[in-house]
Length: 217
Image (cartoon, rainbow, N blue to C red; front, side, top):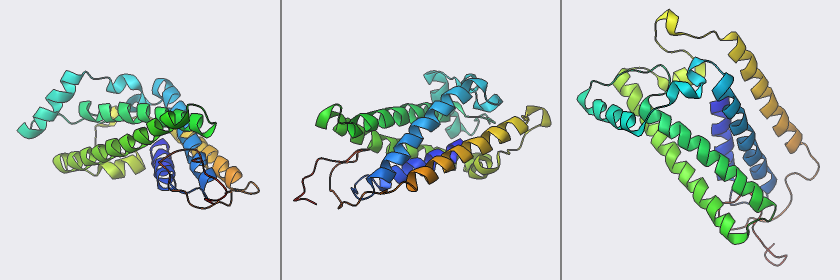
């Protein structure tokens, strides 16, 4: 639930980053990102086995060795995040948090144009990281002959029974997370005057409105 809610939030925010008319929806997606990251930080300590941070704490050397092993076709299969993929996860969480924070500041007119530019750079950097992450998922799926995207949807991978985790607690948390995100979106979209009526602005990617005059409207 966290994974796909984050995908939807980032995709929605990035897609709507240039439109002033749908600014409130862009901001809604941005706030959702911050909420999801906050949840994931907590879940990284109290969540299920492979969701906990300690399960994918690898050194840069381990990541490099894992990438080298791919070319030797002697790579080790991981049920959780592999050493290389773990760095993509850390990067996504970090950039997501920074993008949301800079967007919030820009929306509240803190930091001026400089911070707005940083927000744009972070958002575009996030897109690149996502591209690398998708490439890694595709490569892993081919090398290990398993559908990793399917595993991200169902939560199931091939493994010994002892390597599994109990899903009841995670399922309850997942449903609660989905209900929270859906409820927040419904409340935001249901507010009077949302989205505001304004024209499309050609400004940079930002969580907040670019400065524009009535003449530009």
